[in-house]
Image 1 (tube, helix red, strand yellow):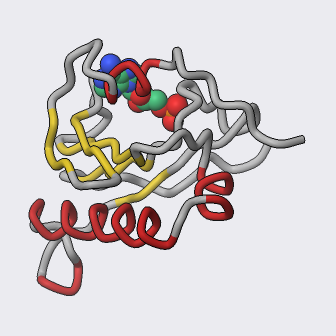
Image 2: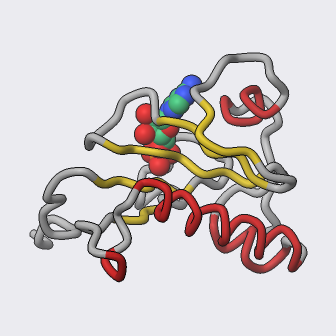
Image 3: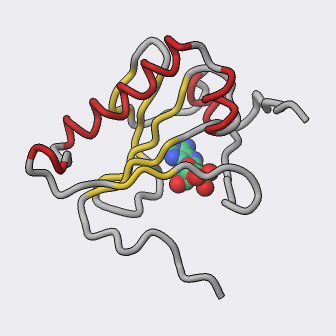
Length: 127
Ligand code: AMP
């Protein structure tokens, strides 16, 4: 079943300027802003401007220009945060929830960039 994008989701409203956000970076195809409920000293959300529900939707249907811009935006933010391990930074985690099992709250693709503390292991052990 193809993805159906809900234009009333909260990130669509942010993109239309209907609700405020704490912008970190804006490019032709991407917007990055601070998460309203940060889970680490640095917690930034990066979204494409196009109507993509989640990562596979974007990766399979976005244009190459959108994918390059989006990917580079994430890298540039990591660089500006000074967290790149290759440059002596302490590291970061990228996370993107998709669908029910991942408990995706907002149905517009977003990659979380979290950093600034030890983030622990990636997942809770399976029960
Ligand atoms: P997810 O569970 O991956 O869909 O994450 C959605 C994220 O969006 C959560 O971390 C929320 O704190 C964040 N969020 C929800 N509304 C806003 C908003 N208006 N501005 C910034 N972040 C938001």
